[in-house]
Length: 120
Image 1 (tube, rainbow, N blue to C red):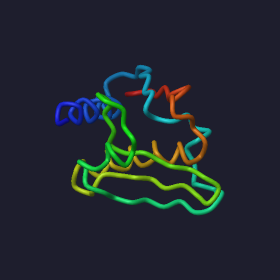
Image 2: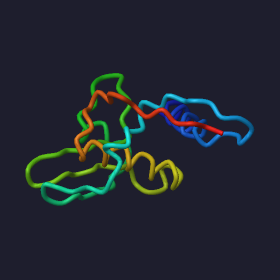
Image 3: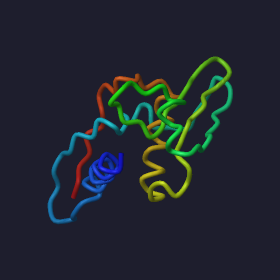
Image 4: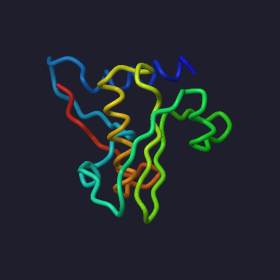
């Protein structure tokens, strides 16, 4: 699992890479702008932090599937399950939370139209 975390973190680091030149980077884990906004309902948005070993079970991960967070949406609101603070850096935690909030805002689970960002 540590190796997968390193790959995930390295991918995020790539987006914040050098200022030398700009290039387009496809980041399928980052939602398109249409889903990147405050949660507007229905109901309330809640975030629960749990220990990483329990995330696979709570988030109903399939065998060999890496999961660090998930979101459950229904007519009463949306619940985001996140790892305990300290598992990853604050910027990575924030990026992961934005990803899950996008699911609360309607971004499908199969991540269509992942964000293409310009990296300088």
